[in-house]
Image 1: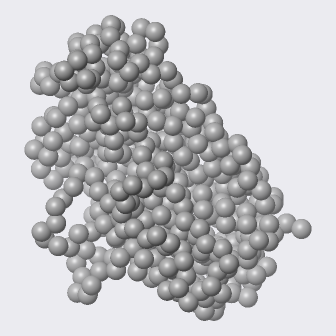
Image 2: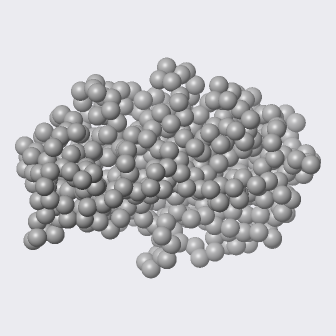
Image 3: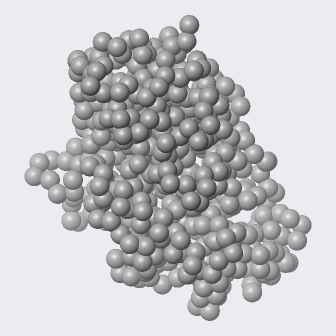
Length: 497
């Protein structure tokens, strides 16, 4: 007999920057979010009887056994605990696993929770360009702590703020627009997101921005990596936490508040790109695993895209939303919301945990009758790991017993990695690029990805020439030819125009 899964409780917390009392660390925020989720139950003490706890790995602080530590703080004695790997896909991936375990009757209830505390309230702290992995210890053995290869790191592509602009430049080329027209389009999308964040009770930023404010460079909106300004980047420096309580529908009946709609989990999916790293990708404008994961999520829910009332597309950068729309086949003029929170630039980008905030927001909307069915997507690293989930006020038609097993067995999607030329020379064709800027707003270096005459991938820097930087940042150079020369002194390839 099919066992349905419901989101029985949900909660979010945002810890303000200015506090009169000591700030909570991520574990403290997880406790707070969990207790808020339990308040949605008619008996909040049910949280102490939870039999599974799954924690999204914190990136801002290190805990050797976070699920066990959290259980002790909540007074719970779960028979199953689990902590995710690194990646923004983690919340939905955990929910898929938890739902399948409940459907198989291995568990009856699972708490899924995550939090980050990045805000530094000491005026003497040293500001870092990217503190995303601040809580990951040196010597961390997992291979999930990196989204780029050593070769890419050597050329200056390591963090999300450096890597995601490569997708945007390729999308700009595919759009066939001049830079001003294209940036205005991106700015309008992000302005819409900022307006959603401004009205969200748990968002970090309460001020909406215009498209012009978002795309115009200045002291408060400096260029980070072409074509992105600061306002187009995820805002990681936040303190936020979220939690949901999944239960078997039959077990959740005694805890359900009849004044609210039930929130069912209809189905989810997970997939990874065979072309894991950017240097391995054959096309910077698509994501085959994202397309695949949404398709199988819809199939598992036995729904068509037209049955979805709203979306929360993972929105670390504008390109992620654009590729999401393209892969899911959401029309340009589709009136359905693309974000429920306002996205990582404005709502806040708490490490691995953002997607959990989207899901708690969606659950609240369904419970209040504001929407009936919504789809949330999540991604890890540079369009590598993808997860999706559908939530609704109506129960599912299919069992979810094997979704996690099926996804792990068949998780790889797409073409094999492209061949890489490590010390290329001769002619090459640009496929995408970015310019990395210093804090004083000046260009520091430009990185190009392209193909050699043999069709192999090259990565190269340009000469630090202001005229080259100006050319790359004013006209789209994708498809243009360059001469590749390996510099023996610098041990890197230079692209000469």
